[in-house]
Image (cartoon, rainbow, N blue to C red; front, side, top):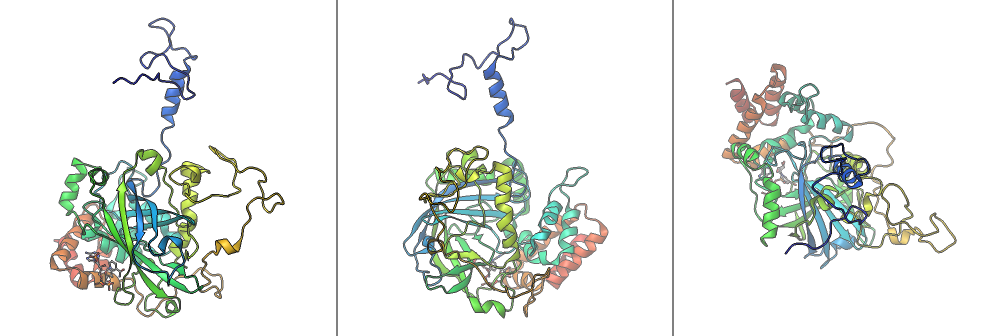
Length: 482
Ligand code: NDP
């Protein structure tokens, strides 16, 4: 049936035509008084917000976390109490490509989760890998520029990527992941998610623990070989978005089992790896996985722009019982994410429905661009007129005092006994991968580093992989020189 409602302009005034602009005679110039024409085109010119400088291409869905186990001995956070079910939003993404780039480019994938908890929003902004390329945020802009496009021809450039990686050996663990099978997941459902950083948990008795999060896919791990990914990049650049959307739409709801690793607070000082270094994992043998609950996605967005493009995740959204660790990358991200949202979607981005808390918001924040709900007087604190007041008894902010007796310096992490850049990627290659996986890893590296990489950088590439694993390095050398 035809919709009987008249089309209106943006303030509800019915409009006469979506066919013809108002002109002076059929062949005459368009009149400036055609307000609707101007509104329509002006609005169109402003439809885009700046795309994210990283993680631009993505998709997402809604769902819930259900806590099936009891981890209350480690945290008092309401979201992790036994039996609690919390509504959630997730956004998956790739990192380096632009918003129209193919989903199947080799890249880490974002795994950003927002929990609408009874204590305010808690965001866990992770990836599908437990580690990262660098361990200090001062290197982040350089790292990302090396993975994006050249200044001269606007092309991505393998020489630039390998130049950076080989000059920063701390990248070896993450690059081993990236070049391995899991560097191109078959879709977002068939990959794990990791909080990656170390966080602080605090229980009701004030006891503190270090924690790492692992979302293990219940669908099983799936990955694409390079050739299949290359083909899909042409056949269906939006393969991941389509897979997630159609799967949820057909009632096939993907799920993950959430686990944590918990380290006693005191262990951090003497553990064999610096536990705050984002290029390191905590081997499961040292800190086994402890099950927490079930994470399920059961609802597609109704509007991609409003609910996914405007979604704003920030590692600084931490609720009582959960705090930051001294992980330098995490510390950098606490600032970077809200800063990016203010630039990208405006100062009042937390009022957008997808970002708004579902628990009461009693903030004194007011005014600014696109503000639509303001606090009533009084608009300052403290006040004598009955406004909300900050109270430590409610907030009980979880903070780390770890290491604050130190002087204020610029320094690399304190090295623990087994800290180096090659050990853990070497273990991954020798002890976790099988022969076939090692062959594919070597082939992926050779394939990636063959294109346009200059001779001095190539020499470093070979040495880099010999440092990770002698046999792997030799294979890469044969493949590249071959
Ligand atoms: P474990 O043998 O206890 O665990 C190995 C881990 O490696 C499992 O989590 C497994 O994930 C994952 N894995 C299997 N195949 C690959 C692959 N091709 N690429 C990347 N990861 C893979 O070992 P440790 O905990 O002692 O760690 C050994 C190495 O395993 C580390 O250096 C690290 O690179 C990697 N790893 C470790 C993790 C940790 O948090 N300890 C997490 C993930 C990887 P799954 O069970 O889902 O198949």
